[in-house]
Image 1 (cartoon, helix red, strand yellow):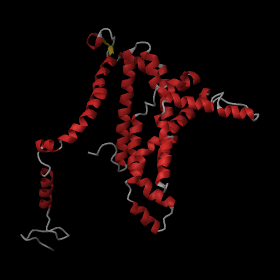
Image 2: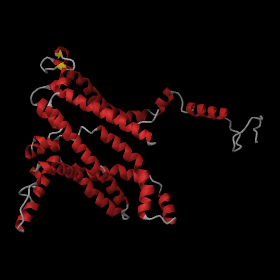
Image 3: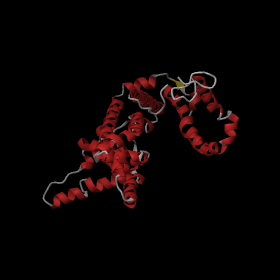
Image 4: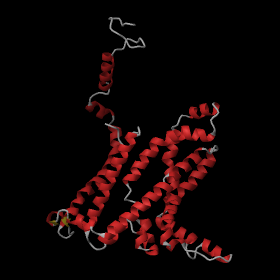
Length: 335
């Protein structure tokens, strides 16, 4: 067995590094970063650059959290937080007994589940297809086209779909001109779930490819070359190299999406609520608007929002725990 100069046991590689040397090296590595004041002086420019983002986060995300106190009050804006009467959990009790709240919750969960199955994979597949385009100019041109709808407002998106699939839309008129009966997809509550998912795909699928394209760029290209030399087909390379390389990003975004399971948006459903009816288009965001904000029941709306946030937090923690069980890091490191 090899020994070091002082006769102590060496590592199997014979480098003379012992366990104590490893501990000292780790301590040296930690101390090499320097004390906190020194690192603060060294990185003050970077910290200064983050101050605007931190300020926006504090002002628009953390300070409004203090307003959740009205969920436990009979709040009136005329008397303020301090003088409003405390009612405890009364608002939550009324919320749990409200059938319209449970109808909106069921619609929200149905839409979230449907879009997880039929919308969530679309940006992944689109990113893989874009990454396979060899010519850079053609790829940039296609990216520009699929990114563009993201910048359209929901008013414009719903209008375009109305012009295409409405009762007087292009498709219905074309069918009538050829002797067929027309149809109106925009006012059919039975197909509303498919309609809103199609609108979401057209508007945001291209924009959602950005993070997946970045993940694809980080995959070592030598792996593809080695697999091709070994005779792996394009599908084999996709299955054994591309998808495993995307897996951490997919799991991270899936966890974040589950955290927003009760938040499917407001404007898209608000614009189409009257056309298909409340039973089909009422989600929690529109429920809060119609049931609380318009009637001045501020505390009731705050209670509904607090329930949404609590359920989202629980879903994130559970999904992150499941990711840890499958060997992934999730949104934070395992303890």
